[in-house]
Image (cartoon, rainbow, N blue to C red; front, side, top):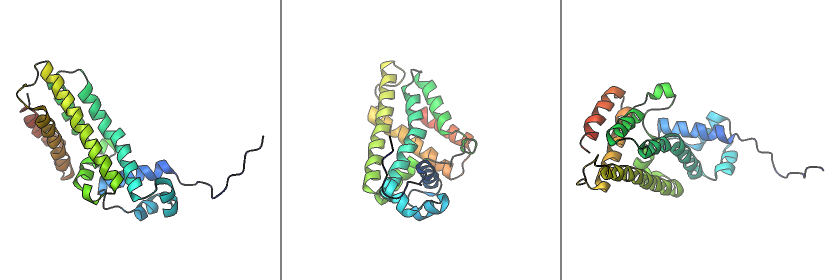
Length: 199
């Protein structure tokens, strides 16, 4: 049986390459400081091809954010879901946050934190997803804290929502220090002292 003829120009854009390049550029330089034109120069893709694949600049940023969620947020959620004691989980969280980015081949800082900081300059779809992920992060912290409270590993007097916001703020601060060039050992020390207040 013969294959039906396909109409239009054959697809030549390498979606994975464009998406990976966009992710790393947004992460390294900033989500609002990289244009689709620059992504095209780096990947050899055409602007029409990128727009056909992702719909818009907003669509490309949204796809990059989803990829970042899988790469950096899901592993953090896994740490929070593990049935470790509260102290061990905090230690694992600090180790995850302060990983050697050069060894991993990724930029310092956190793309999600950067997108939160520039939320007002993002497209509607990406901004909405940033809000959803913020809720997902806070819910993950809250579930972890509630579990620790149920095992008497964390003071029941600490409001769970406040503690979740506190851990989230410490993570964001660590990511900003990382971008500023503070060494990982120092950031880990700061986090150990900060996290010790929630017990």
